[in-house]
Length: 505
Image (cartoon, rainbow, N blue to C red; front, side):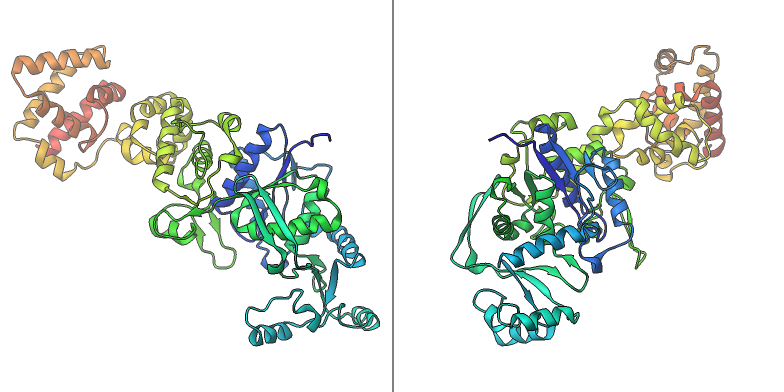
């Protein structure tokens, strides 16, 4: 039999912001598709109209645009298997619902919510299945004429899948191996609701995967209980030969304690659980995002890829191309992956160090300009070269190195008490005299002249340099002193020295 082209899909529901766990699922689908030279399809599963949230679909698309993960076809990308939004495929689903009914593999059910609640109250662990269906109001128990009349009269109904007991359903999972389920424990799931003329997830999912020629379904482990039902549906339609392979990914767990990762964990511990910032359209509540927090998209991808999978080596920094090459879906762990947000910070710092100074400067320059400073990109790049190893995020650069662009107005009291000694004003005045005649104000020239003067005067180098730093920076921080003074230039360095002498005395 001819081997099919690999096709995977990411099919979120537009019910709110995309959780970072969903991003990892999409990433694994992308890596798998690219590794096998296949296609990555983007589908929107919006059959539950009551849960639709305005802006959610656009948010999802923007997320992957920021991350640099491109879909081959789907909503907003086009393709020959459209439409890719389930709410636009109503007529397609109706056709397949009718096929199941005509074949006796599905039936109409007219039970009201109140009647179903009454069953749950009176029968322990009630479920609508082979044991109970014949005592309910459905097309299996009602005369055909009555069923037709009720439908013609516009009475609301659902269509349920008729699951026969005594079958063994085998889920051949790429991660979890062979999982065997007895059909006796499955209920007759609702496949279609007349109220909104839309299918439920279970039917729409199967029909779309078949028609869109999906070969592998890679999704979270929360969907594993649905797999037996989906396999039975494939059999009911006679699609066994095109049934996709399943791979159910482990959950992302809280950084501490038990349970899966939630927004509450992020709020409590101060880290994002959404890729982009999200404003709830109803409450106005704003949730932080990785992008707005300052993470590099490459760092987020690298971090997520190693949550539940690793290449089997000590290497941790991996480009997207390396991830595509190394990824092995069968090596994903079965147990949940703990979300270590400190590791996410580490990854971002490593990517900060790995990026060129020019690249970081282009991101930092708008922050400099936003603080009212007109400075050339070349000068900003010089500062980045000296300071980027000290930060995790680009936005942290300004508070750390604003002194390069703005002279100190005040001096840190603790540093003054510790570093500005009674003789410091006199020594700094002498230092200004040493620096004044230098035509070459480079780091090396300054260092030679100052060290020679310190030696001649028999001063303590540490005392001199600490007071010098306080005068130029305003506190005890920053890179090498002559790197700072060289960047500032002679005029600005002398101006700051004289200001400190005048202010601190």
